[in-house]
Structure formats: structure tokens, C-alpha cells
Length: 106
Length: 121
Image 1 (cartoon, rainbow over the protein chains, first blue to last red):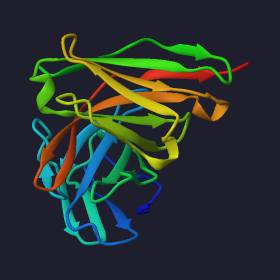
Image 2 (cartoon, helix red, strand yellow):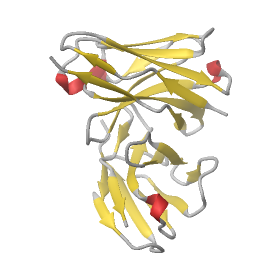
Image 3 (cartoon, chains in turn green, blue):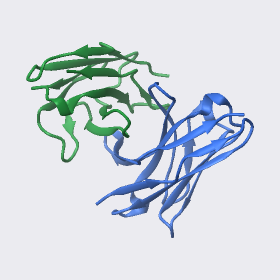
């Protein structure tokens, strides 16, 4: 199975800060990488697919990059509504696997 | 608009089975896969498997093989997930997730609201 490792596991930042989360795959996955946001008590929401493509309706303050093993999710200007836990997921091979999550706080 | 509405919370005893349903609306049901993902309390996300509503083909994670069954009812635009031989470690929120096929593989887009399954004696 492909292991997905996110860092940091949690972070605290101020409103307006630029926030970056990293995700590393245990083997190369090309750009078969997605990001999800989960707010407390809610279902996850899909943000990005194919490493850098925004899902429909996702604001442009979110961006993703990377290929191979190393990926990043960036929030350009953190707002209170962005708090929650962010997960990366690889869909290069079965079983599909997720990172452990990064909890973002203000 | 796309909606995935799941069945209500369940409480089961160890050794029992549970069935969670997911009713889809707002799109052509047979054109998208349906995946299942679970989340234990305070934990991360775990992929369980998927079903192709067009033909009923399924694939599950090796961890759940022999324990989980995915079915669909095309007339009701509903998919079901049956999990058997429940233990306390199956206590989790179970999500159905629509998957669209792309050149880069399965892309998850819409999620159900989740169904809490509690396994307790």
C-alpha cells in the first residue's frame, strides 16, 4: 500500500497568513493526488484533484502543486472559515489511501 | 444539484451486520462510481471500496474483503454498503462518495452527509 504522510499534523496561523501543508507519498504517484477539507462535525469536502485542479466552486485562494512523491496545498490568505482538517489522498493505485490529516487553527 | 443522502445512525451488537444506504439525485446515476470511506472517532479517513452502478461491478480494499458487500438499485438510484461480523473497531462514520472517472483515475467530488455506526454490546 502507498503511505501518505502529511506535515505538519497541526498548525496555528493568523488571519491573512499564507498557509502551506505538505504531503509525501511512499512511492511515486504522478499527479494522482487530491485534497479534502473537513470542518468539525461535517463530511469532507473535495477541494483539489490531479494535484492542482480546483473542484467546481472552490475559491481560488486554494492551490495545489507537486508531482511524483511531494505535494503541497496552499491557502493564500487564511480566513476563519478555513479552519478544519485537511487530508491528501492518492488515487494512483488500490487501495486508495489518505494522509493522516493536518488540523488548521486560527 | 448533486445530492447524496445517507440512511440514519445505527447501533449494532458485536457479530451483527449493518446496511448503510446512499440515495443519489441530481445527476445520471449510472455514469459515476460510488465509493465508500469510513472515519473512526477522532481518526482519519479510510477507503473501503467502490461499486459501478452501471453494471454492479465492485472492488473492495483487501482489509474488507469477505466482510463488505456493495449493491445498487438503479431504479431507486441508491447504493448500499453491507458490513458483517461487526466489532467495536467498526464504530465509525461511513460516507458514500461519488467518483468520476478521469484520465488521472478516480476523482472524488461529492460526499454524503455520513452515517454513524456504533458497535457496542
